[in-house]
Length: 377
Image: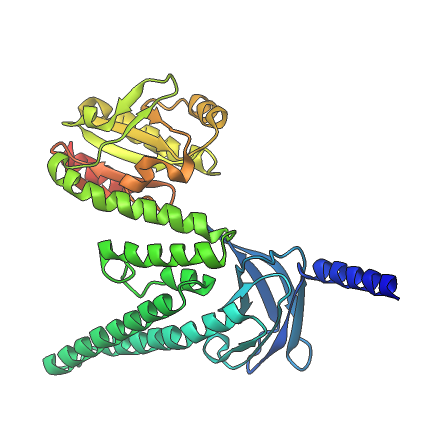
């Protein structure tokens, strides 16, 4: 009898282990003519559609996922009729999502603690965004008096500050949850910072330290640490920027010679961040080669920093594309000190630095880039 009981327990544990990587999502969407529901998996750089289903006659749907991390939630989105409902899923979850009408504004979710937290956050954040858009549409009317316009501007500012305060409160109160990471990266119209620029790093650090205890194996922790490193570097270099006009970069080229960005001072410098892994690198480098050929003799220099980890791939790409300017790489990828110094969050990114060492433009391309170069040559 004892032996039978032991075998039964082992089988139950094995069965539980097998099922722990599965996630079921079901629910019902009504109030729209749309018939398809899509499931996206969200990574740091992109969203990938991994499955889709057709609603049945009652508006019901279901997804079954396997091999889902059971130790830390991952961000997914249900996409229906143009609305994207965020879900934080981990192995073992059985999630039910229902909505009538506007899916994002009216949805309910059960069966996932982290997804329910996202719903709590969105209930305030999304409605706040709707309110901001309504105020902005009124502000664009041509028949407003000065008093009406002033009152609407005051109302807009108050609404925006209320949303931000609620966002910060959610992050602090749920700092040990992955939902706090999601909230950290949401931005209101026109904002690049979370709340107050340099001090934002406090909130990122607070969440990272809490997640190290609650989800030590989360793949969002390296993302947070990298962001914190960039923000710390940006803060520490502000005084240097004032002294030297732009942060120094000293990285070897393919021959091992250290190339200092500061050695180009007095020229018009296009500081360009890219990666050999980007599929269209040949196209934008071809455009840069045309500009370089036209303006190099007039004082233009390009200092191109590769955010790569493979030396072979980078060297081969530089040689195949016959890049004529200064090309450097430290093979640290997103951990490169140059990434932190210039707060690079997307590729390609560029900065135009004039002859006095002032940053005269960012992320310029095409005619805008050429016009800016001609202005400062």
